[in-house]
Length: 209
Image 1 (spheres, rainbow, N blue to C red):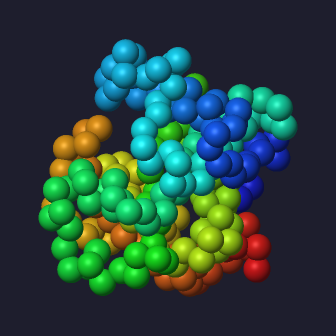
Image 2: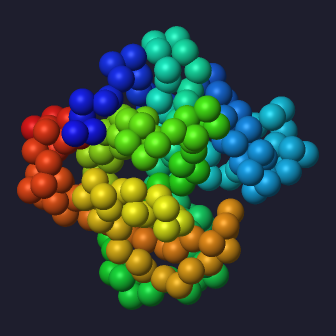
């Protein structure tokens, strides 16, 4: 059971920009994405990955200990005047499934990142880092009135999430964005029902009920 592997020392939090915590998460993003070749160091001022979307989101991070470094993070981007990043990256080619989503109740999961020291672990160990991140994501989404997530992800992450009953359905064709990825959407309520049906302990952990 993944719930037995979750280290108690891992601490999560949600932050808005500008803040020291967001700056730390931007540095983690830059470190991982530059090493992977997705970003160039010269595009990261002060060693931080910063873009226009940082002002329209909540940043979520997992620390290794109360005062330890961030080892994982993501940001939840809300609907804004110039649309979601996924719309921009797909050139407006998202399908009818995306068009049907209520934009004021939809948010995009973006910049999911795990520190290099944890990326080499096995799937269960990586999930022991990701699950606290997603628990905080669920909490923030409920607080913000978000019912649906959209995200671009590769097949490895999609399979990992599906194994834990986080069902994301495709809403567009594959695109090249930090590697080949597919645009997806998910219903938070549907995920809760799936997790509850297959793993009640995980449901209690993620949703607190």
